[in-house]
Image 1 (cartoon, rainbow, N blue to C red):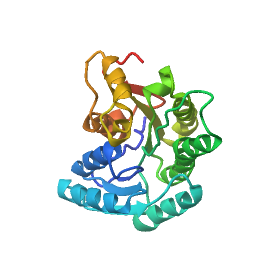
Image 2 (image 1 turned 135 degrees about the horizontal axis):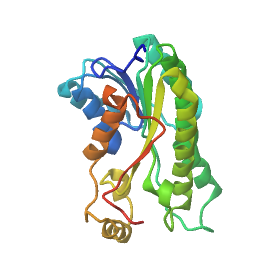
Image 3 (image 1 turned 120 degrees about the vertical axis):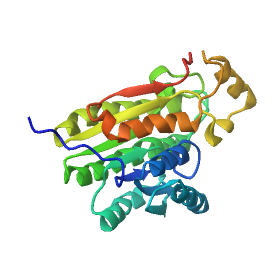
Length: 253
């Protein structure tokens, strides 16, 4: 039997969305330390430049930054056009960008629904389509979608956010089935409560309640999530696809 091609870590081309801070920044740095070529996106151009400098010091030979607001889908096709123009290939996509929304049913505005779904569902789904086209050219690739324990377990006050993350779990499972014959793997990471700028935006009461629900009695760190993403991007996970992997310290939401 002829072995299927594997994505080599060093020199692999990987797109990371929401890379200017938090989990996205940690994933970018982990990829850089393994010699991957990076295409980083986020709304914050200055933040991206800072992360790019950190990635260069961490070991990557090539970083391209593209400021992009994923609440509008207009920039997604040009993003992947630039990836192809620069590298002629794509090996990995990490759909990390997302927005958190707290709100009880009956208090969620239509514009909130539109924004959360645009960033958390529409943008990553479109990115997956363009990424799959590029990956199909070489018959290999890995897509990693950042979802959430809220998408698998739910939580009071997070119906909209949970709905968006549940949608991406379904998308991951479906895409894995569709893309496996092309040699493209699709997996999801479902973090619990991770210490990021996003979660620090929650009220103190919400943060305390989340930590109290964690069996390991602490929040996770972005670097812990990044190491899992790195595994899913690399050759050691060559037979892993269609999985939703929790990383939550035994959180009972």
